[in-house]
Image (cartoon, rainbow, N blue to C red; front, top):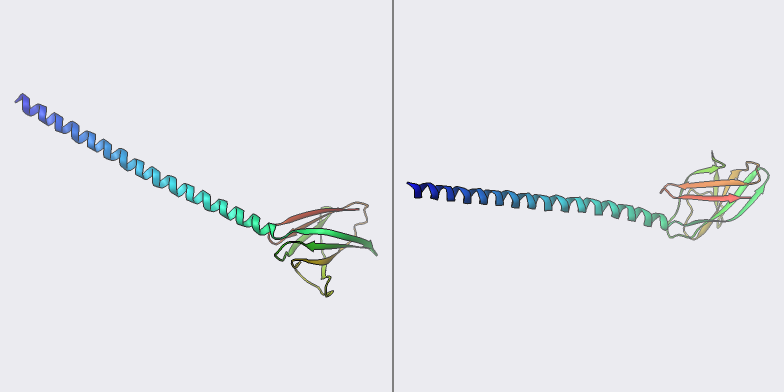
Length: 148
């Protein structure tokens, strides 16, 4: 009778150890899968950020010249990038302004600055000696210039 009791106890301990091992192994597998999904999501969001930054780098606007005359401020802006850049809004001394934009090659009105080209952006002159101009593009690029 004593032997039977010992055998049952030994089987019970083995079953318990196997059950605990199975639980630990299944939790480890679940944790590895969860960690892989988290890393995948973080990687894809970083790739999206890098793609947006690369797109903005393809649009490189530079103020090459400016003229103030007859109540208007004319800015000559060159796009040194490889993609067209479309202004969404222009601020002069913190106030949003209406503007007219002309392609300097054919003197026609345009709504985007083509790569490797210069446009004339005509704004009302605020009259102050120093003018801060902020141009925001549709792709989220922000360009600032100070005109004197």
